[in-house]
Length: 90
Image 1 (spheres, rainbow, N blue to C red):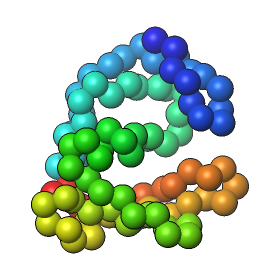
Image 2: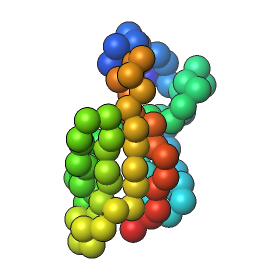
Image 3: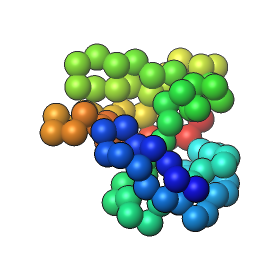
C-alpha cells in the first residue's frame, strides 16, 4: 500500500496489523521499513480518548477520563515533527 507522508512525499507499506506498545493498543497500523521512527496519528488517538495540548514547542498528552499528564513530546524545529519524551499507558 502506498502511504502519503506530510512533507516527505510517499512510502510503501507491505504489512498492516495491530500492535501494543507500553500498554497502548493501536489497530490497523502500517509497517514502513524505511522509517527510522514510529509515527502515530494524533486524530486517531483522539478518537480513542487521548487529548493533546500544544503550546510552543511542547505537546502534553492526557487521557480524557483522568485528565492527568501521561505523555510529553517536543517539536524538532528542523522538520516540525514532535518526538515523544515519555508516555505512560492509561
